[in-house]
Image (cartoon, rainbow, N blue to C red; front, side, top):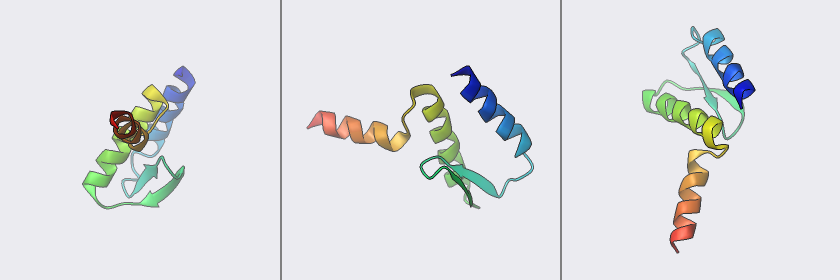
Length: 68
């Protein structure tokens, strides 16, 4: 867990100047994104994965499925 956080923080410090790139956690790659909402969602998604080991979409899917 701590290694994931350290790796994530290291990547964020290295990529600070690269504002055109946003990590897509679901694909695991890099993609060009100029939309601030997409960057914010991807940032929250990364933090969610670090804390819970599930992405936001999985949490929503499980909550909807559990409600049925």
